[in-house]
Structures are given as structure tokens and as C-alpha cells.
Length: 182
Image 1 (cartoon, rainbow, N blue to C red):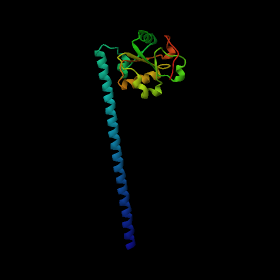
Image 2 (image 1 turned 45 degrees about the vertical axis):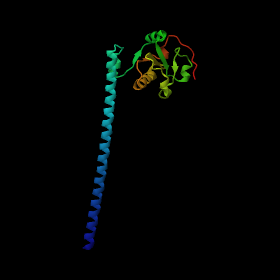
Image 3 (image 1 turned 180 degrees about the vertical axis):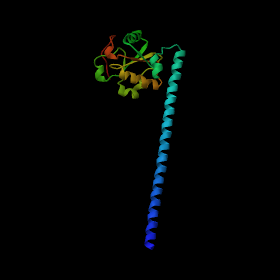
Image 4 (image 1 turned 120 degrees about the vertical axis):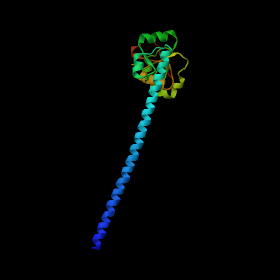
């Protein structure tokens, strides 16, 4: 009988320890879920703050009678697209900075005269080379996709008056020259 009581007590102890372990695991799972929820809320708040900042800056542009496209407002971006004709007008006016974000191999086919050559994968490290002189900055790549990404990055870094050459160099029929790539 003592052995039976001892076996029952041992079994009860095992059940109790198992329940405690499960409860501890549940506590850890609750802590992890709480921390995850807190991170998600912080990320969502940061994203909303960025969106609100873009909206404020867009409103400032409207108040200054600067060009703001429907896409800029609807997509929440601080840069606009320009077609080749408008790009040519900006370049030939001499009132624009020009940044080429293509690879060095792509640049070998020609560049827009006066373009600063900064491949997209070097942009973060070399963005300080882009003048902040109040002029419009035209950014282009081969077809307009990478330059749109570059404009998005530069706008987050505080650059203003950015335009993306929507057709890129492939649609460019303005003046071009051969690069002196470093």
C-alpha cells in the first residue's frame, strides 16, 4: 500500500511539474506576443508619422505654388515624374542638376551632358555629392524604375525639387555625350 501511495504521489508530482512547465511556457508565449504587438504598434506609428510628414511637405509645396502632380498626392511622394520633352527643357535651361543612377556599363552608351554619375548601389554613400542649391534635380536611369527608387530615397534624405525622368535614358532624345566615368 505504501508503494501505491508513493507511486500516486510521484505521479501527482510529475503532473504538477508538467502543469507548471506548461504555465511557464504560456507566460513566455504571452510575453513574446506582447513584445511583438508593441513592436508592430511602434512600427505602425512610425509609418503613420512618415506619411503625415510627407503630407505636410506636400501641402507646403501647394502653398508655395510649386508643381504637385496627382500621383504625388495619391502615392504620398515628394518627387514628380517628367517626360522627355520636359526633361530636355530643364536640361537645356541650365537650371537643373542632373544625376545618372545607371551602372557604369550602361553609362558607356552615353549620358546627359553635365550629369553627375552615381550608380544606384552607391547612392547612399555618395548622396552628399548632389548639390542642394535650390535647383530642380533630374534623376534618370535606363527606363525610369531605378531613378524612381533613387528619388524616393533622396526625398527621405531631405532633398527637394526632385524629378524622375520617367522614360529614362532609353527614351531620351535630347543632347547626350560620352561620360568621363571615375
